[in-house]
Length: 237
Image 1 (cartoon, helix red, strand yellow):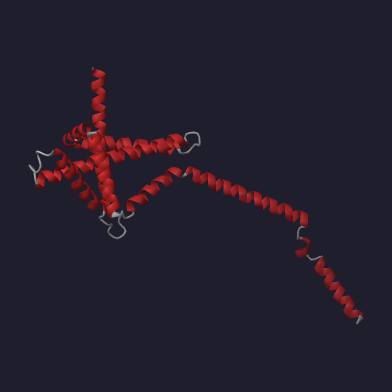
Image 2 (cartoon, helix red, strand yellow):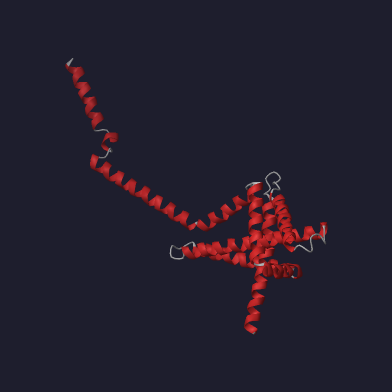
């Protein structure tokens, strides 16, 4: 029995002084390691947050891309088209008529001017969003870009409505301009809504929203060309 007891105690002593047990840290060392790990996690979270803040411009572009690929509700889309085109035609009839004429006369020039303007505004947004100081400017550039596109969309809808009415019934309601304008808005809004509802084929993106975006870019170019023309006339006078 005594020999067995001695063997047992010797095994316990060897286990207590084995390398595995000798390498185990003390409670204070464990606390220090936990603090170091916690600081490492906080640093990583801060780095991830900073990286996300830097990618706000890219995220904005991805959100726009996802929005273009999402299906649009037909009724809400139609009502929105009617609203923006009716407001434009009600408050700025002369501007709409002159911008429409410029779009028809200088198609590619208007489209190129609007495209360069949109690219410039988006690049300014990307540069401004990188710093907290210039973040308000970034939101301002994004707002101006969306406003230009909405105004161009209104002009594009009106141009579509005028073209459809000119082909279907050129002399219809010539003596009633208000009813004729209302019919132009309804026809253009309906046609634009139908275009937006065109689905994508397989993995291809939805073409409808992109076609209307191109039309809005053209309308925006007409408005910008008119604005430049009026500015030059004011300077000359």
